Length: 446
Image 1 (cartoon, rainbow, N blue to C red):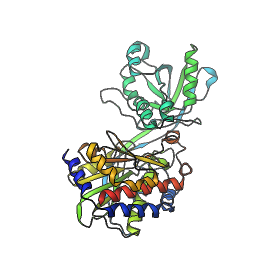
Image 2 (tube, one colour):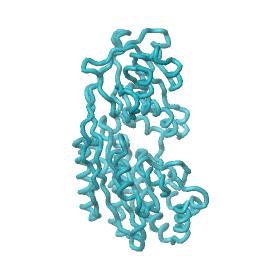
Image 3 (cartoon, one colour):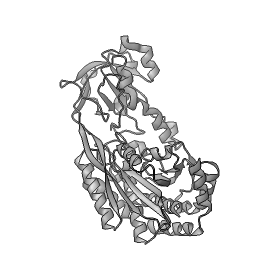
Image 4 (tube, rainbow, N blue to C red):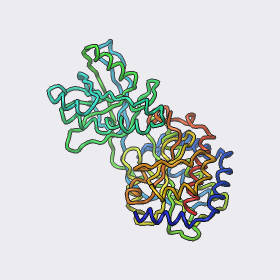
């Protein structure tokens, strides 16, 4: 509460200069292709950036070098990160003419036996159904979670709500099934579209339960299994996964900042995560966010702008499968005076506004000072319990949080798939996103 009251006073004491400069920032960025150029190098030249990989290490080095080239002070702060490596991924049905099943291991999954797993498939659509079936019907089986995203929510611009509902089975499904003796699980991929592309993501094993292999199959293959089981067919699957979990690797958060001219000890953080999944090059998740953050800093430096408060860019490492970068940053910097934290981790489509943890009078005061954002359709603020995973430790401690909301309609078509590539991002929309981030950061810092 003290943080919010202080933030309200900060807004009330601001000058119109912050707004007029924000207009200039937006006008300067909109015709630019620099954010897209940054994203192009990160995705096309460096590629996938799962923690512990060569790509992740290259990304740390390259982004650090870019900040230095732009004459922006930058440092690497060490983070120990998980090092999980994907292996072979194969599955087919022993019934139905040995049809091939397209799937991918869920991040962090253990491997099957070298010869794979062969077992009957049991379909469920809830954790309660697991309890109803019990050990007698689940022991030694492959549990199939058939939980599609709610497309009505997706079509009404509530895709992230639909995702949060469906993703529960990816995160906890393996341990919940293992409790009843299941041999492995497969889930229907958590996505809003599919051209027979599986969607990966992270799981979380319960240390009290055995670790069993876990994979995500395409929507098409999930529907096939459902049809066969609905017709009373005996469905038996063979599945081979060979991932490995190696010792934790050394990595780093990349931190750059433009020091404040009057209150440098007060910090406006702008952040995105530098890592990506390994199936593709992470253009929408979260290369776009990285490009927005980096371009914001480059633009402010090029314009020779000196904010009253420090603007700090943080490229977090390991959001996808552990959040180690966020936790390390909070440990190292949590006692510093952050007056706001902005995260961009929702793709690179045209901006629609921000989520925020601010409420009441503080939010009203902010809205009165952010009229320049209307130029990029970003002056809508929706109250939410959180504003992003990487700034979560800060917002939980009371720091006002903001999360950019690009148009979400097609985000989960490509999210965590081998289709998350540069061609899914429009340069003009990415420039609009960057302008929104840069202008909000400036207004908050002023």
